[in-house]
Image 1 (cartoon, rainbow, N blue to C red):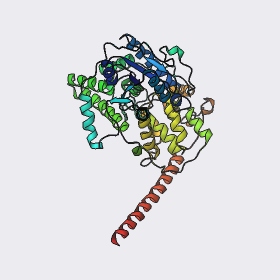
Image 2 (image 1 turned 90 degrees about the vertical axis):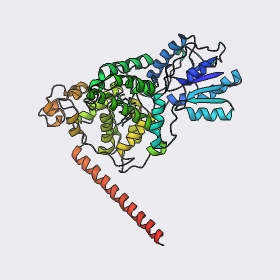
Image 3 (image 1 turned 180 degrees about the vertical axis):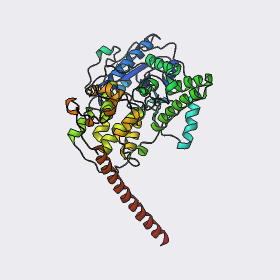
Image 4 (image 1 turned 30 degrees about the vertical axis):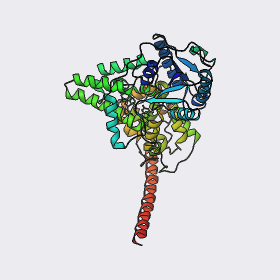
Length: 458
Ligand SMILES: Cc1cc2nc3c(=O)[nH]c(=O)nc-3n(C[C@H](O)[C@H](O)[C@H](O)COP(=O)(O)OP(=O)(O)OC[C@H]3O[C@@H](n4cnc5c(N)ncnc54)[C@H](O)[C@@H]3O)c2cc1C
C-alpha cells in the first residue's frame, strides 16, 4: 500500500509525495496524532487547533478528488506496524525535511519496507553550495495537485476519517481566539493580499509593532505547518517582481525573498551549529519568570509584547528578540523554561529557527545581545499606540510617560506594576558579567594559543 505521510506539509498543491503516490494507483493519505508529539510536549493547544483546522480543509480537498484523508491517534511506529499487518507491504511517501523522517527511516529499515522522500533535503551540502541548491529547487515547476485520488476501501480499525472522533489530547496552553486560522485556502489568500497591496510598506514598517502585523506577509504559521510551499511563495513573488518597475517597490519584495531564504538556510543547518554554552552566569526566580510571562514586569514595551503574543500568537522579529533579551540578559534567567514557553506561544514555532535566535540573543552562541527596553520601546512605538492597545491600564497617559509610566505623577493610581528591575543597573551588571566572561575566555584562548605555540616549538 502506498502511504502518504502528512506531517508539517498540510496542503495538496506543490506536494510531490502526494502527486507521486497518487500516480501509482491506490493511496492512503495519513496523518498521525502522536501523543508524544502533542501531550506534555513543547507544542500547545494553539498549534493543535491550527493543525486540526488545516487537516479539516485538507480532508475536504482530498474528498473533492474522490480520496479520503485518514487519521490515527497513536505513536507512528505502532500505526505503521498495524498498516504493515493489514497490507503485507507498505511504501511510505514523505517530504525529505519532515520532522518525523528519522523515526520513519528507522522503522522502514527495521521492517524492510520502502520509503521515498521528495523536496529540499536539509543538512546536505556545504554552506556555500546551499544557495545554488536552493535556487535550483525554487526554479523547478510547481507540482500540480492530483486530479483523482483512489483511497482503499478496506482500512484497519485504528484509522478514522472524521475529526470528531479525535480523542482530546492533553496539550499545554490555551487556544487563540483572534489569531490566524490554519488551512491552504487561508495561506493562499494571505499571500495574495500581501502581493497585491500589503507589501508596499513592508520595509518601512518592519519593526513597527502594530503596522508590521499588516504589512509583513504573515505567512510564517502557514509555512511552518506546510499550508503553502516556500516554492509557491517564491515563484508567485518573482512573477510579481517581473511586473514591477518602481525600484522602491521591488526592494520590498527582494527583502521579503531574502527573509524566505534565511528561513530555509537556518532550517538546513546541522543541529550542532545552533547549540552552545552560556556566556553569563544565570539564576532562577519563579516570581520574575511569571511576571515576565504574564506581561507584568512594569516595563511597558515588554508587557505589551508578551500580552500581544499571548493573544495573537505573533510578534515581529525585533520584539521577539527584545522579550528574550529582557528575560535572558536583564533578568538573567536560565533559558530552558522561558524558551519552551515562548515556543508554545508562537503559532509559527519552528524548532530550528526558534533555537537559532534564542541562542544568539541570550549568548549561548556568540555574545549576549543586551538591549535597553525603554530606549528601544521609544524607537519602536514612539506614540505608544502598541502599548495602549495591549495595556489598558496605561490607556489614559500621554506619550511623554508611556514608556516610563513610573515617572508619571499619578502612577500609583493607574493600577499598573512598578518596574521589577532598574533597567540601567541590570544592563550594567549583565555587561560586567559578559565582559568578565569575555576576558576569561580571551585569556583561556590566549593561554591555549601559547600552549599550542609552545608544543609546536618543541
Ligand atoms: C527570537 C526569534 C525567534 C523566531 N522564531 C521563529 C519561528 O519559530 N518560526 C518562524 O517562522 N520564524 C521565527 N523567527 C523569524 C521571524 O521573526 C518570523 O519569521 C517573522 O516575524 C514572521 O512573520 P512574517 O511571516 O510576517 O514574516 P515576513 O517578514 O513576511 O517573512 C516571510 C517569511 O520569511 C521567513 N523569514 C523572514 N525573516 C526571517 C528571519 N530573519 N529568520 C528566519 N525566517 C525568516 C519566515 O518564514 C517568514 O514567514 C524568529 C525570530 C526571532 C528573533
